[in-house]
Image (cartoon, rainbow, N blue to C red; front, side, top):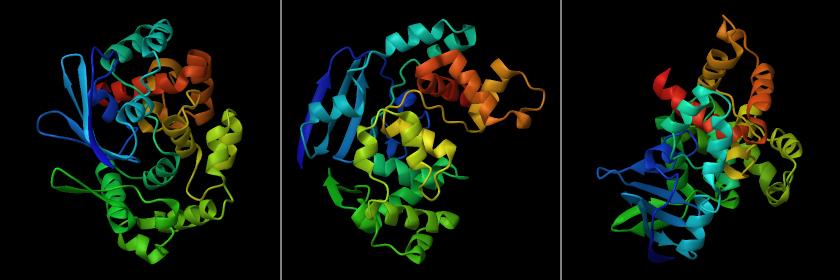
Length: 288
């Protein structure tokens, strides 16, 4: 690993709070100066802004330019998504304005599987705490600017922990699920490389659902945040609320089924419904 720095001029559709606070990541922390420091698969990265310029610096394995462009999806024109989705209605347009700087991160598939299993019936501070403890227990330590950081453990590293080890780290009822899923991936019962190569959303979902602790919502989160499946539409309490309020209009929100929501999302947003979900989620959580 080596210390590197990159400054990109006039980056469009890139707001730190929008990207790191829209529910897609758990290892980025806001600093007092407004910057964010994150632990990613290739090292530790700090991201800050000066007007429309974005400054990336950290200690990384690999070239910072390639890592940044891939991780932050900088080759994708998000203005095209905005133009299409803004045609849906004024509510969608408002949500896009509110979260105008959102980008979907290209995160590590293995990390997203375990992270979103941990996310079940959990809140963000607890999720982040569990992931940090797992990483500190068996992940690789990286030191940068006098601070120790821990990379997310590989499959092999996490497989060293027993169910009781996982429970001791505060995983709760998720301990067996994390253990079982780790063993399945370790034994290649689920081939992550094959999933990364696939372009078939339904087949990917079918495979992910075989993993212990992965239900429909978790599978959709994994696909959207690790595999760039923009046709995945994760549904949580906020998404259910905003979709019902704006588009389905059932007097009893609790009676709105996931099937109803997915049908509405497909009809309204098509194959970029995952992008719409992020705008709606970020907007709803702050305004509903």
